[in-house]
Image (cartoon, rainbow, N blue to C red):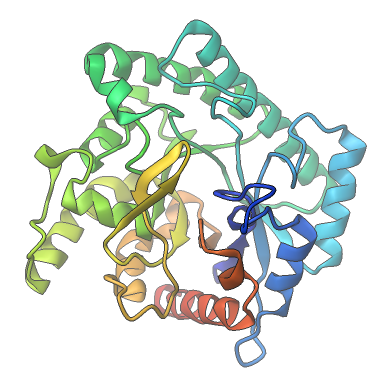
Length: 336
């Protein structure tokens, strides 16, 4: 079965703030922009959702969740992976923080798993995972790395057990702004310490994992120097993907220009840039192939473009979505 192509809805929310030049973009408008994308008659198959206001109330009633599912289905889309609101200031808390923080983290996953179950029963969702991260900073994590690794793994284990009760899998995002997953080695250690490969895997994003190579928040784990050659790049990329691919259960197509960008809790993380950005550092198709080798053996049925923190003017430009869709189609064609 060919991979389904999805677009992420959270670029309409992350880094957006009411009363600024970049207010949140509604779910309805994000669906419209996604629906309008077209490359030689090929379209997006579905969307991935962020389960938080204003797109989704994580504590919404079953009827409200079904109504949202109807709206998405009416746009011609399936729902894939869900992003749990695990961060302080949403529903959750730091996965290696206080007892209350860790309990709130698990509660956020529980709410998300229940929503996932409703969406499956509705028929709007047949595949995908629930995405999580540690919801804590590298700086806080490194204050006591040994103890925090243990706390993080224990919280993930609790969250994984809750997710499994609802027939869900979790995927931890490889993003350098989250403690315990701020380098490829930290991420691998967290996954191995958690030790639930059938339930808790890895979510690879091309933009974020590029900075794993450079060791931006963990210099001791860098695989490349900034002045790397092409041969050095591909050797380092193979080291990283060989280590993390067996855990990879969710995948984001993206591009990175080599810089970091962030806002609020998502600070100093990999900058997502346009698929056709001339400053892009990645061969999107070749890099994706290295992550997606034997993807079906890990239960991956779709890939998703992530354009997190694009300016609203970029998001509102139709050619942005056509370029994104074109890049995703090329990935699907390459991996089968």
